[in-house]
Length: 106
Image 1 (cartoon, helix red, strand yellow):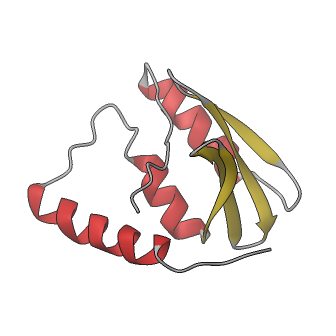
Image 2 (image 1 turned 60 degrees about the vertical axis):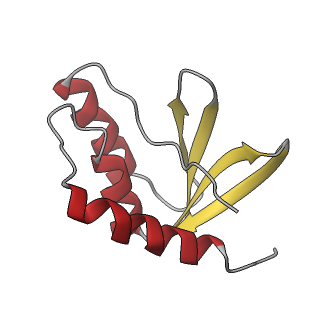
């Protein structure tokens, strides 16, 4: 099972900074909206170091849970100047695949 976790899509460095600051300012119970070309999703702050990315997968609403550092790293990839090196892609995909194979229910 492979899922795409949406990140921010920005048109400028200023917009990128504003979005990252919004994420960093999230308090428990608050959320931010992420606009994508094909969908909208939300990031919820569950607790001090627990965040949920809400999106649809196979027509079902799902939450992907992350700690702050992991989710911020994912969001940082929207920086217009960010370039991923090829030796970072596969380990990142493997880690994400492993985390998505763990089934959790609320």
